[in-house]
Length: 509
Image (cartoon, rainbow, N blue to C red; front, side, top):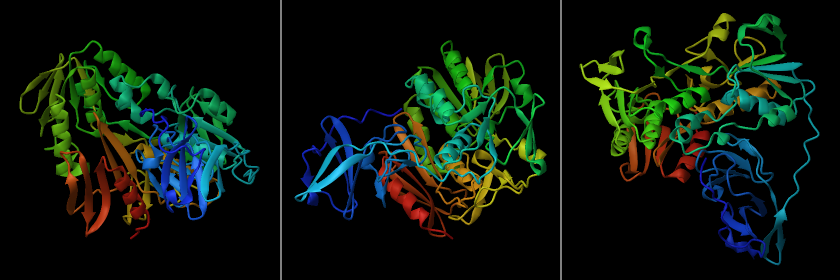
């Protein structure tokens, strides 16, 4: 879950530094004794907080200061410099705040500040009588946490039949599958966290029907539950192979912790794996299985992996990177038949496989919304506040298609951080705060030791501008339409990625 960046570096801030050593808007890594500290300056104001992101331990001194906040260079989490509060996912846990004093032209950090008392209000007693969240993934879990942070005291229930949720889903195809992350890292919080926050998680019965007019849901066990407001955060499910290919074969898909465990178990007895699909999941699985020393073949219909998302330049680099690590590609091909441990391709080539994983995309789980008569548009249609066509019903995450102020189009994005940030916005709007969704989409993908950060959203572009050298793993790739950046993908240019995010936040159509 990231490296340990807590080794003290920089000046001893307990002994102080001259005021002029840090300019306005600057960040400085220092320490007090053996404890690392981040010092920041905003005009005449000084702040000090813990310097390590609470998500994957990213180094905040290498991040970007935006107003009185700091953004993590790795995965774009955002923290308040005034309070240490985690303001934007993927970080969920707050950071400690330190006391700063100015004396005789020097700045001193004198020790940790006491934890602030929980806010006395508002209690949001005027909000919904109760709130139901269907889905304990990124959007649902984030919404539940945000509701409690915002002071909501009513009954709050999460429904999800996954016995392990909520957990860190992106890790399932990366370090956990590769064997370099322990299972202890996977839960977002320990079970007692939800008990302490008064968040009830129901796993023993599926929600089978939504009745917006009556403001109630029906469960598979026959129970009926009323609500004041509801969030649909039902996520997506893997696209499955045709039934005739699955029949008599063990095909693995990766969506849940259980799926990842099953692939790990199967890999321990396998020598050769065939991955169907060069999606992000498919390629991350390929990298993880190579880390487990399996021979890996990837079959995909496109000329380059991820070309439709990343373009031919980055797609070609990703292919070469995997080939350097021993992955064998079979591109412009699909599986025609699977039988007896053999995958036969459209060109007649036959691949022996001890382990088959399909990563050919996902479909949003919209059945509940469709059954309730909620307006659809290649997903659940929502407004800028994530409200559906049904009063009191909101939608977030993989299922939601919203009006994006930065592209002027309605978009639906299937990424973890996007879902978490939508959960925050939906939660506040269920409390009547009327906050528009204006966050820039962001995701990251890890291939061996190469991270790719991507900000923005580009379904179509007319120009790709490459700054730097992709093969040298030092670049920013800009996807433009009509001369305007729609998205920026970077490799080892974390600060440039953060600056691109800020630029996009201030650019609307």
